[in-house]
Image (cartoon, rainbow, N blue to C red; front, top):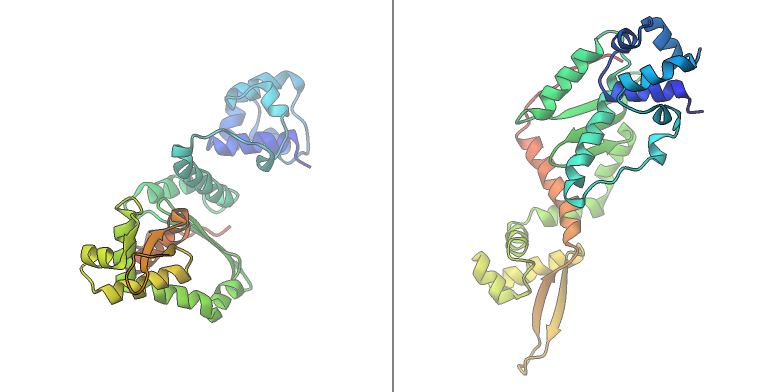
Length: 268
């Protein structure tokens, strides 16, 4: 059950405050704050306005004891990617904040440096009996990648369909055409036009477009021009799929090649 103590702990952590800092503002001991957050005791009703003020919320907010999953905040579509990254990074920070071996302030300071650096990358790996049983990776360009377990990760290497998609995307002609179509308003083109713009042969463009089609990224329409055979016209479809899946895939590949260590280990 989500309690007022859980709410106090959540608000405090979101503001990167320690129990000691909150206790000093309210005028109680850190032990009292700890007992509230562990639901061992309840704060006196007379202290609620002070607690709310210290956490920059209202008293009503303290009693809105709903989980984050039930709470929604309006975000402008243009700001959604940035907001998503910040929220994911916040979740990563909170996943580390209960360690006793390192101060919470030091953890947040270190993670903020990693997040804001040119090669900032942040991750959390959990182990069980010496084996990885879960991992999360947060990056401002791709937001998040997640591995449920080592077994789940290893099983991906056996998926021939997935390997086939990687092979198709590794084709230089496919990449040239994808870049051209994305930078020219998803132009509707013939193989001849695309070949000319990308400086490849027409038959190479046709092969690349067929590879696109197998990934569900391009539509092919046969147009009757009065010639002996219809003319193939190609149009990029599902552009969102490129930005949600293909682009992150290439960004991860770049990270693998240009890997820059920036990890700080914490035992939780």
